Length: 275
Image (cartoon, rainbow, N blue to C red; front, side):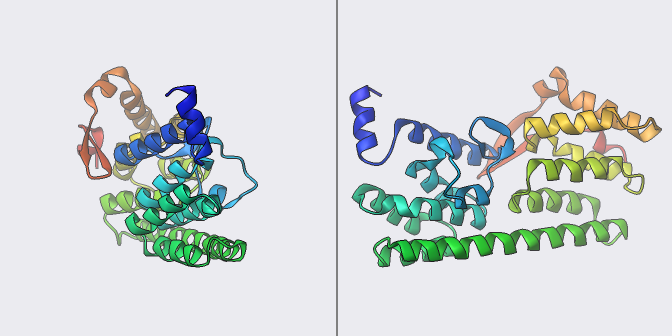
């Protein structure tokens, strides 16, 4: 884009960098990769970051990536936070206000529709924006608490044999992703499960089947923790599995197939034969 066109976009309340970021966010949703903090791929972007107006999020402060998240993010806390952060940018800017209105029409989340409608009907008044920001913060905290409770209940059910291992692992990743857990918390949870003597090896290999869904720094942290764990037979087997997962040969065998906004890794793993 020429400097003239870039200047025009800036005058309209949007930037070339924001457009690039919006396209990158859309690709993340398409592939199932987490949206991370700018310049820090080890930190997943959390709703709290979007709600915190004092936090500089670089290109994510542009209306376009915020509109993309408010419209396409699969989780309502993240979408609502993005719409909340975008709302004051629509005041006094007809183009951004128009995009904000489209967010209300196109989003999959009823809460976002209601937030957009309330702010728009009140002409983007600071009072209405502050009200929505407060409600969004409460919703984020409540939702995360609910996901944490569900995680604990599932773990208890797993140890008591009341839930199928594959169901537990599936819901574990769904809940940790939907709950927008920090990367370090997710890393500790997975590491604890992998190293726990009370967790059957088959469950651990099911966890490793989803290794590709984690940010690279989180994967490295898990590999490091397992590598430094006290020697035992099942730890040695885990090390072998991790070596295979991160090997070039393994990476060459893993290919992605698109299923809506989800990404599935089609692969053969030791978890298919170790129970």
